[in-house]
Image (cartoon, rainbow, N blue to C red):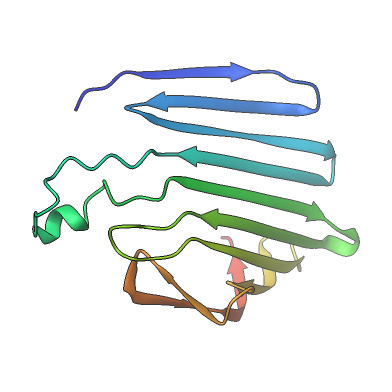
Length: 157
């Protein structure tokens, strides 16, 4: 496998860091923007071209579930905002291209979190995941990911 990896860090106006990685015919690019001391946006994009090396008549189930069955495109954007009175509001968007070998369609999804820093050591949060759909397929047509809303308590010692 031993492909070469090239990393480049670019400095563009308004962007703090952009990382570009090209490895074995895959492209990953990401960066973050800090428009204010209380706000941050992180974004990433991955491109993996579909290259199938097995014969079409192959019935090898390990091949069908192998790393060749990955989405062409993955996009992830996350914002983190510090609000007054020690509140935090984070949102995330992701797009994942379809998995043709598994029959899984592409999808868009959103997450959100409202947190309150009750003390230096404790954060209480209300989190919502997969908010755009009641459920959808991920990884395999037999695996369904459901919408979720839950409370979270983090205490650091």
